[in-house]
Length: 247
Length: 180
Image 1 (spheres, each protein chain N blue to C red):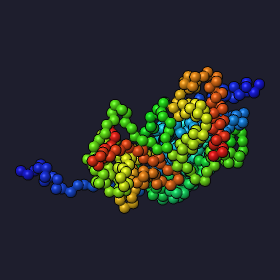
Image 2 (spheres, rainbow over the protein chains, first blue to last red):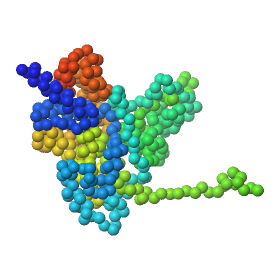
Image 3 (cartoon, chains in turn red, orange):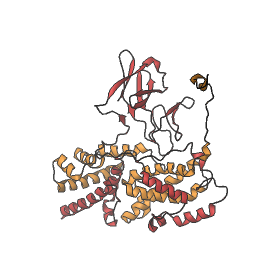
Image 4 (cartoon, each protein chain N blue to C red):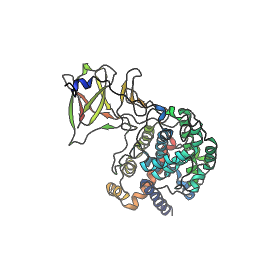
């Protein structure tokens, strides 16, 4: 009897898991409450398979339209609007619109942004992606990988000051700490903008959105931090020459 | 006859066009913040459809706050507080349980949004504490995108057997998560 119940529960959980992994809604119901911890763990596991998920460009456009109008658009159903408390939102919006507003949402949001940017494209989803790692390392496919001589010696690098190099298609910052050199990607993990070293702040700054990384490649953003800059493979030859694995 | 000589043309000062930052449309700013909210929610519900619905709810609730011209920090805090509340409502509606009970759940109870990498680290910690067969099953199924049939073939068992094993592995992972 217990075995049959377990098989039944296993079938049910697998249907829920298959939906979630296919990007569909989680169709759990109160009858699944006894397995809620298992279901939530399944959702959490599915939630890391993308590494750093981004909104699709279609959804981003819809959201932009919604924010511009400040009200529920035609594609939004009544239930979702009610869940969002939209009646209040729309009412407040109607009363707040005034001559002093600089944009559709109000006048003081400009101080949040440094520059305008194009909408990001959704990253490609690999069906057989490797397990998400705490910090990625860029390793070109073997057919393309080759070591590039940077033309730099260990002694050319100032301690703790990133130095920008290129290895084929890969841009990297090299940071020396004593006799050790660490390589990390020169591209922001938020959007594909080249980072710039800001000497006065000791930060790698993303000029697109004014986000920054420290010399270890860790995001300085408060709250929901960006993923760290992926490592780039570096080796120091016996004569002190520094080489970077690129393409 | 110097006309057109490159060195003469090069001496002319370059024309610099400066775009004032204030021309940036506020919607872009809100979308930037919502991108982080989306990632936060996706890490908890694990699917695009629900993540979009919930992000949309957060966006709609935030519109009046955005109009007030609050600071960036205040807007971010508000968005994440709203996201946590939306997640609690989401699970509450699914399981028919009071939000208060679910708010204490490890998946939604947090005073601060955790950094993006912590979701991954947390999952890795959970997996590392599981027996190897459970760990392998969950890695193949959830992180490598194997179908259940492929997982069964990889682990040398039947489809029915692997379904039961998946349930047990998820229960074991939930116990580990609860202890952590």
